[in-house]
Image (cartoon, rainbow, N blue to C red):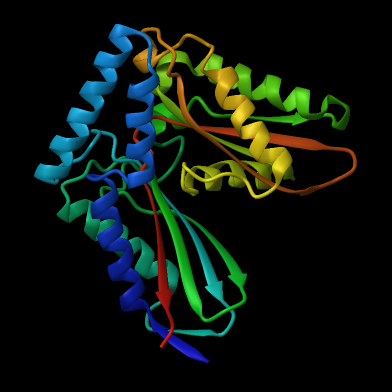
Length: 283
C-alpha cells in the first residue's frame, strides 16, 4: 500500500490554480495559433492576434488571462492501493483553492447559495468529483470554469431514434445559440450517454482532455472532426464579429446508457480553456 499525504495534494492543486489562471496550456495555445493560421476574415485575424497578445502579457506578468477567474472544478481519480494521510481530501482541495485565489489576487466569484447570492469571499467550495481506480496514484484534472460560456451550455434528453443526427443537430443549435455570448472562438465538450447528470459531467470532463487529442473510438473521433467542420461554417467567428473560426476544438466523452434514452450535454468554453492534469504518486 502506497501513501500520499494530503499536504502534497494541496500543494499540487494550489500551484496548478496559480498557473492555469495566468498561463494557458500548450494544447489550447496551439489551437488558437491554428485558428489564426486558417482564419479568413481580417477582423477575425485581428481579434485572434489580440487574444494571443493578451495571453502573452498574462503569462509574462503572471496576471489573470481573463477577469473571470472561474469556479474550480476537479475530477480526482484515486488509486485503490493508496492510503491518504492527513486532513480530509475535500478539505485540503478547498484550502488550496482558497489560498490560491487569495495569493493570486484572483476574482472571487462563488456565492454560498444560488438564490440568496452571498459571496463566500474565497472562491470556495470547488465542485469535486471522485472516482476510485486501480493503481497507487492520484490523478487530478482541474479547470477554473468561467461562466460567460458556462451559461451558454445545454442538456437535452434525446430519443434513441434521434440517433447521431439528433446529436449533431443539438450540438449545432447550442453553439449557434451561444453566438457571441460565449466569447468565441469556443471549445466544445460533448457528453453522450449515461443519465441526465452523467452526460453533463462527461461534457465538462471532455473539456479537460487535451484539445489536440481524439476520442479513442473511431465513430466519435470522426464525429469530433465532423462537428468541428460544421460549427466553423456558422460564420460567428472570433468574438462573434464574423469569420471562419468559431470553434477551436470539439471533444466527446461517452458512457453506456438505458435502452430508452439518449442523453446529450454540451459544455461550452470560451477560448480561455484553463485546464491541467496532475498525477501524484504514492510513496
